[in-house]
Image 1: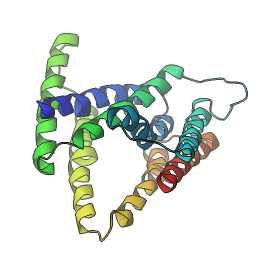
Image 2: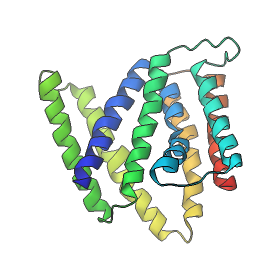
Image 3: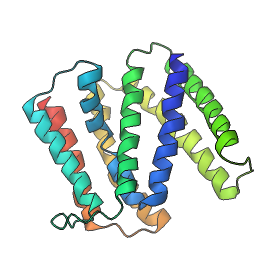
Image 4: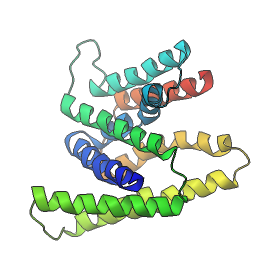
Length: 221
């Protein structure tokens, strides 16, 4: 039952929401806003895990969400001109789903590889069921197949297991955990080269604020 719940959160609901956010927003905006999940994790841990939060941590969270504000307005913060509020809400909602997924994982003692298999097994069942109810079954084109294989194999499959392996092999989690902050900046490079988007200054500034807030929250917690 726990694996069914986790499979509903991720990959099913998480990717339904996140991919829609990517469809509405520019890739650089959706990716950067999605990186507020550590902040959302802290916020949801307060009511769900009964964790206490310091005033300094609240300040760090505000800094991160101001970064989202900069990205959502594309730097025009004084005019409060949100370019696509619906897409921003979806991107933020995906962070809540991701945070809930990891909170539920805290109490799951199943082996990581088995847990990943069960999550995706139930997630696939939910996807097939929703497809039969809400859409017409069809064979995706080549680009769709490549995208599906990439998400399943690399983004969540190999990457997830490699990350857990890296944590086990490192002397301290800090040696590996700090490298995670390189990911969004490398993602901007990939987006620029592979997707062809011109990276906006507001995206870089917003990302720096988001990552800065996350690091401060980690230091001050």
